[in-house]
Image (cartoon, rainbow, N blue to C red):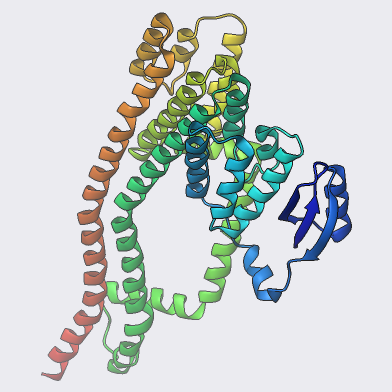
Amino acid sequence: MPNYNYRVRSKEGELLTGTTEADNKNEVISKLDKQGYSIIELSSNSSGGFRESFLDQFRKVKRKDVIFFSRQLSTLLRSGTSLLPSLKSIQGQASNKKFKAILDNVVNSVHSGTSLSESLAKYPHVFSELFVSMVRVGETGGILDKVLDRLAELGMQEMEMNSRIKSALVYPVVLVIVAFLVVNLLIVGVLPKFVSVFEASGAKLPMITQIILNLSRVIREYWFYIFAGIVVLFWWFKVYIGSKEGKYNFHKNLLKIPVFGKIYTTLQVARFTRVLSALTSVGIPLLEALGVVRKTVTNVVIRKSIEDIRKHLAAGESLVEPFKNSPYFSPLVTQMISTGEKTGKLDQMLDEIASFYEPEVEHTIKNFASLLEPIMLLVMGAMVAIIALSVLLPIFNLIKVFR
């Protein structure tokens, strides 16, 4: 979708400039006219040519852009700057071109009288339902600066957690890739050079050598079919998990995987409690908060469990009982929720649960990665040793024959 630069004059006579996305120029004219602007100048921002428009398709608004936006807007509002000048200031400083264009549209939308939450809701791929819901509460309660600060804090916590998990898994993943490349190099690149020598000798080859040679021949002669089979299998798997039943079964099995299943479940629960704490702390009613947070949980099985909890609450039941009946929330979670409900400090208890579980997850992943590293090294060494033996054993036999 092309960008259009415009210069307009508002009903109050103020001169405004900006950029907007639209399919064609008539759509831009219609949009600006509805906002009550008089168009002075309108031009397509496509001078960058094919390369620039092609790259625009792949530019994304990163999580950190939204976090910095929340933090900056919160700071400006707290300092006494009104909303529209604050948005204009942030839009002018934005370094991400795509985010800059979005903020420009948000500024124009707010200037025309639309609320900030409604303006942000037009970009669900950038501002999540959670983000929009909390901003709406902040606008209604006059605590927008506090809500934005809480959103920035929540985003930073999630980003830091994801970063620590990824860094813990980097080395094992690199080992797996190196092992795959080394084994394939030996089987496909090195081993075939000895085939002619073995065949010319006429000697009976050891079983291990025959197996490795046959494997090498299959990979070299049928690599295209193997690759096509992997692609087809990947496509089928993608279609399967794209279906409602397939996705549910896949997510259900993820929770049952030894070690990983426990880590994955704990991460989902930690995210759930952290987000629910953020929602309830700014005054969103619990039922509404559960409806929003349910959509932020990526596992559909746990999501269904949260929806069941919400239905029980809507029926007038106590908060604790539905959590007790769910297999995904430990007795510790249930007990802390019960304490929070009784003391009226539910948001604090939920935040405590997340603060307890997140370091535990990080520690478990680090221990698992530390255990995995020597195992991967042993497996890689064993595979290389097997391939080396498959080459050396026939050579030793040939030496004996020559002697």
